[in-house]
Length: 236
Image (cartoon, rainbow, N blue to C red; front, side, top):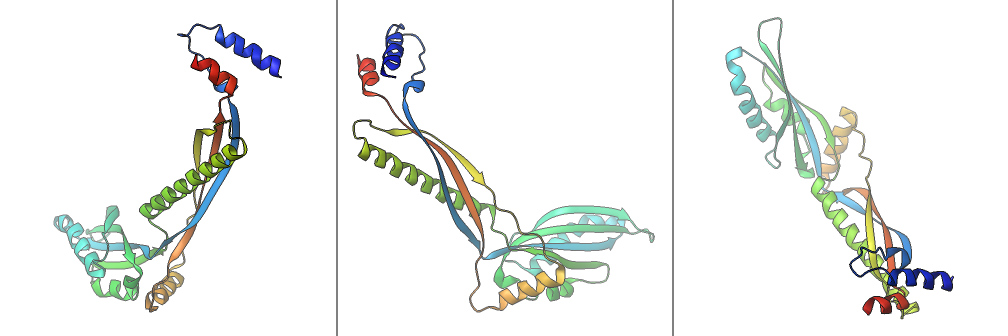
């Protein structure tokens, strides 16, 4: 094996200095599969609301503004976004408007949502709670993934330190690291009467609970060192 290495080394040394030589195949490499996981917790929920209205053609322009004002009455602790806006002509000649809106609300806002939806409804304009999902936000997932990556960096560093302690003459270093995200499975929407009962029960608790989801991140790490004989040749 040593003769083969010296022969390859002799071939490399005979190549002109300006040539593009790939020395990576001669490095001493150690490949590792590292993993880190943690729980991502949230104290907020995604709330989906449907608004249905029947208006004349002239009143369509005011519908969206009116619906947004009513949603703020439902809760002003989150930012409401219109997810869908559909219109059709009904048999009476009025425009039938269907609007779906979404907001991320704190748990303290979930109690009595269905009652509030009925209170802001009126003839010709009704509001219903479609769904409440206790899932972490994208920002919470990004923060968790940042922490997981840092954990993997620390694991890789610990492996490098351990190798250099066992083989002090090798001078191992981080050659490459490739991250692999393992996405959590989002919980399925609950049936209306069930999710509203659970949401209301959570909101009545004196101390809000944190609902979480476990996330994982993996990394393929390659640690390498350059053989001393090659290092000496390249230094000349």
